[in-house]
Image 1 (spheres, helix red, strand yellow):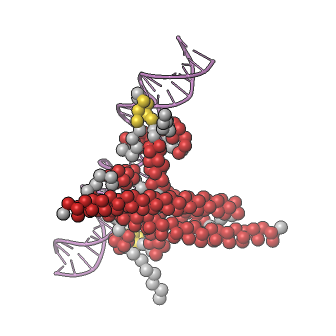
Image 2: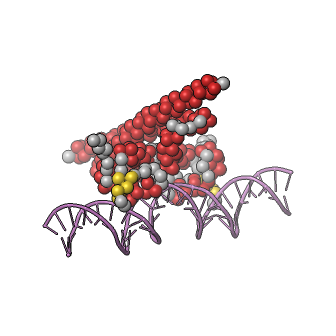
Length: 135
Length: 135
DNA sequence: TTTCACCTTTACGTAAACGTCAACATTGGA
DNA sequence: TCCAATGTTGACGTTTACGTAAAGGTGAAA
């Protein structure tokens, strides 16, 4: 007998630190597609992964619509015709470029943070020195 | 005579591809602080840089409030006392961790994009092969 | 059996980040 | 002189991503 691991909404909510409202909202937006036991939602591993991916996208500033688009693309790769597949490849490439831009942004912001930290530490030294002298 | 480079709102709007409404909104939120010539706003290089940084932050999913916080931190490093400076250093560290998380996210999403691309290209090959055989 | 904890739907509320008028000032050219 | 471009301040509208009740079903434990 094969048993497939499933999750309740509160399990997922705890694991990822989001409210159940959020999870239901993502379903409403077509990002996840849990099964049902009567009225109650049952989440599969696939749902869990998609939730994870959705949250990861969010951290990168992806809108839910963008993430859904990627999910739909993923699903459609199995049945697309030539034209469709080439279109998908194009979109994927655009996303990759977006990510590259973000990577560059991160590097720059990191530099800026470092520079402010430096400046801050020097200001701190000055203050501490003054305190020592006055003591 | 020293001349300092200034910019009009439309110049900046064109350079960065945002509407003038957006620039005025950022001012209202305290992110930039242009001078005035009568009623008309005059933007300095500092304003231009801050606009650039704000937009960069946006691409990384920073809220305007967060970016403003960083600007305020930057400004306050020049006059902070010890306690204040240590607090700032703490906040900077938190931001750095956030950036690290984002970097990890980007790497993972990039992998996922690559994997979908792969899958897509293989599906494309299958389609193209079929076409050749039928020809 | 009642009291939880946990689940559900429906629906209105809200904060952020602008868009989109409206109505008006000012300024450099034809 | 007048007009088009560019600027200004409100102020209301819109989208996204949920928050927050309200009102109720369900199963297990006490």
